[in-house]
Length: 169
Image 1 (cartoon, rainbow, N blue to C red):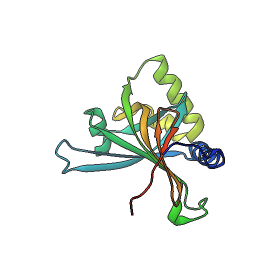
Image 2: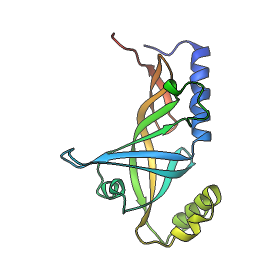
Image 3: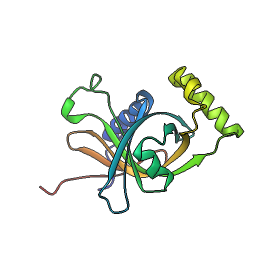
Image 4: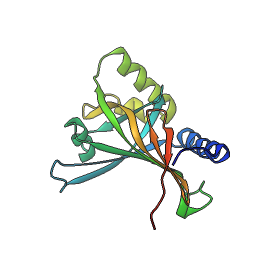
């Protein structure tokens, strides 16, 4: 279905933008090649130029899978306390290109400084931990749900609305 209702689209866009501004963490899900080992984690993020950056420990299975270049699904969900309806929380799930930013370079240092300024002094402690890795997450496609009967396919790292989802039953 084409996106033609400007008022509805404006509301969905506003909810998407508010979610991206207010959320502080990404949920991360990935699995082994066989699919029999599913790993899940959560990480604080910063977002620059529509790319998410997370700093996470390889002690988490999901991080080891990310280092092994396994497919990853990310999600952001509205805070329960902020939701007007617990059954219809605004949520965004997406796939992305994931790349590690190696230690020691100017980009690594700048991003770690920015993470520390957004998420507090813990970053100054964990920054030197060798089991932690900095990842760039560049979204490519996903789905945003903004309420009952309000779900849309999104594409690109700016989460452009592409088409409305509908059920057959």
